[in-house]
Every structure is written in C-alpha cells, then in structure tokens.
Length: 161
Image (cartoon, rainbow, N blue to C red):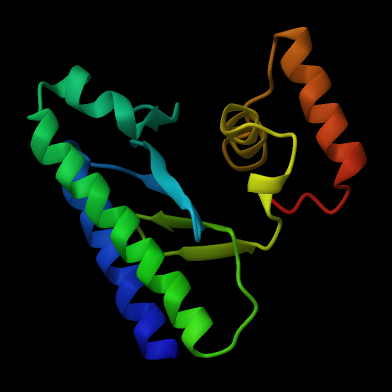
C-alpha cells in the first residue's frame, strides 16, 4: 500500500511541478474526493515572492494553453481519486480530502481530513477560505469571512481541514 501511495504522491508532485511556469519555493496541493465527485487545486510561492498564487489563475497570468492546463488538472483529480481507492482497497479509513505540501528542498508533509464536508453546511468556497487560513496563513479582512473562521474553530476545535 505504501509503495502505491508514494507512487501517486510522486505523480501528483511531478504534475504540479510541470504546471507551475516558474521556479517555485513551496506548494500546497489540495484534493477533495468522494463517491460523487470532488476537485483539486494548488497554491505556490516563489523565492522572490512569498505571496501564494492560485493554480486556476496560471493560464491567464502566464498565457498558457487552457485546454492543456485543464487536462493536467483532470490528471491530478484522477490520481487523487485513485489514491483514495488504494485506501478503500486496503480497508483503511476513508478520507474526504488531503493536503500535500512540498518545498523545493524536498521537505514533504501530508494531512488527511476525514470530515465529510459534502454533508456539511460549509460550501466549497467556505472550505477554501478555511483551508487558506490554516495552510497559507491568510487572515480574512471581511467580517463575514472572519465570522466563518470563528464558527469553524468553535465547531471543529481540532481544525481537521
């Protein structure tokens, strides 16, 4: 099982690396997968700019072919879904999302979230705000987003996302 998992992590990291059109310092990859669907995205920064850039903006900012970029996004989703299948096939607890971080130095971190966000009142947009707060350190300035973060922390004090 571990070899299969590592193979998918490597494929995901290599694909993200190929999708980033500049030298990166660190990236965070997020996948949310269920039986009904899901999605993936990533953020990265560079040595020159510590501010994180959103994967979906890459084709527009760097004039990259959108169709080719979307094909790679589909591959990231496919591999994330296959990774979840490895867990199922090996009778492991099923996660609903995972976050992978990789630094250019090779430092690798992985976090699985077993919360079924599909059955919660938190929308995908809400989850992204919470995720960006946890992993990227983004502190919302909007009062509604601040209230969302506070609500999340009161409902989920162990910060599972």
